[in-house]
Length: 88
Image (cartoon, rainbow, N blue to C red; front, side, top):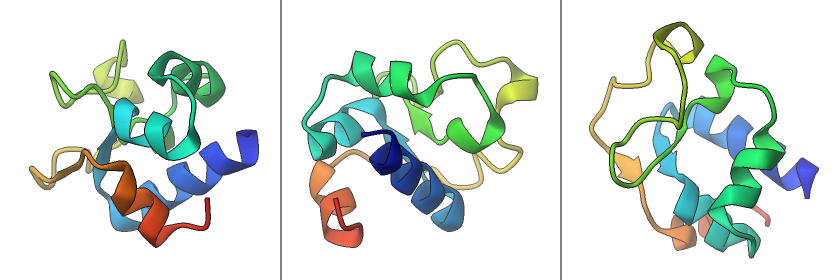
């Protein structure tokens, strides 16, 4: 499962687009809480995964967020986008 989280994080970094924990969780068949746990330490590269309510990564400080996190208002909210674009 960890390798699939890495695939998602790498994809989000390449397209520089936020994605909700819910969309990632549904694409992986796990809970949003499990996604957060699998992410491990807070790092800018992992901050693309965000809460659907706020559009922000959970409990990240400004220093832990990617500098380009808010470059677009677009947020991936559908698991289908991830499953279509990635081999999950």
